Image (cartoon, rainbow, N blue to C red):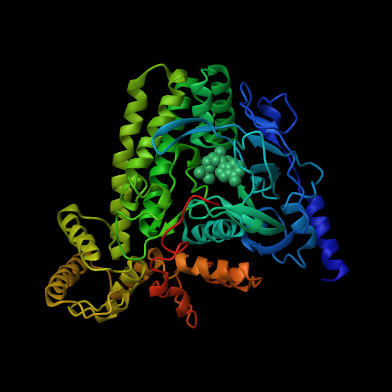
Length: 534
Ligand code: AMP
Ligand code: MG
């Protein structure tokens, strides 16, 4: 990179305007040294990232950079690596770790907090938008409990790519600006089987309007700190929900809960649309902004199975399986409702909002199903049966969800053989006659329904292709990028980012990135099974 390029990046960085409202307006932990502890009567602790030896920038999202008025081209990445590994603080940054609690797998877990996340500060960009920068994996904080505060390359790469893939799919999500190797090793026991091994360490810089979770409220309620609970909620409304910052407090808090409920329901509809399984929907991993947050042992449905979860840590109860995500989201909202109850004093109105989740989700899911099938709207008398049989068919033989919907758009009405669909099946053997007959009956019903809808085939296809992605971050693709990166070849990170930037286009020449999971990936850790080790 030329001197002028690096000067340009330096001047962009120098121009970032910080306005750290969370730290300025909420109470800080008075203790300033960095040791593990319970932090009461405060929302955050000041803590500096731990410097690393050889930071190297291996991933950069031009679209996330644009949010911060940073350049699309990272140049040689040297200055950026220093900053987004946490080695160099810029003027105006104020690093903090925040305090939250949470229900993990249905059980109250007490204080959790940013154990390996450090907010660098809040940037107000040229358009007046506020974005919080957060490093994940930049060293221990008072909230690290028994862990090391670090993150490994494989999980960081997965978070970096998936955050941006989700954004381009139109799914509400936290964003990822950068992926930096630390040059240091981190010990992890991937399979939790007593074989810890060194892995490359990495840091992701995440970006979101705020990282406030359900658990931020839960911890204050659990500690009966109603005063701070009210302060945090007033702050959250003023900063993240300014349009609600008017009515009397009781209405305002209920309106806020209603909006969080709505946003959460809408986010889950998107997850179900694209076949995303979060894997760890603990209440500490739920954003009040309705953003997908904390990409850990997540996965994408390959063969359609509503009972599937990628998270091996959840294998016994499958609490966070694909089909259970709406119900879990509502349960989590129930915990948030409990947390703010002291500010409302009446359960009735909170329950009414909570019960509204089902309606919002059902309406959203119906509209989404109609859109996936290319219809203008959902007509229950036709579409209840049509969609029920469709999902039964998808589950009857191993069928790739993403490919099926994409290929369905290519089936001509009246073509009961549905040949374009062949590519979506995992079974190498020909489909049996009973299944083919059943599918033909469904295709006939679908064609009749499309006629009632009245759209032209072209319009229906265009509609389907705008909500049924061709490209998602298939579990095995992420793993291939990880295998290469661990061997020192970072090329696939940028390559995948490029493909995933435009997930609804055909992108001819890039068919390999749309292919169904190869057989080798069926049972390989990282591809179909992920532990929480990260
Ligand atoms: P997660 O299951 O990743 O959402 O994490 C749950 C809690 O554990 C959060 O408080 C995290 O900050 C914390 N945590 C997870 N991994 C680490 C780590 N390696 N070091 C410190 N804290 C961690
Ligand atoms: Mg988490």
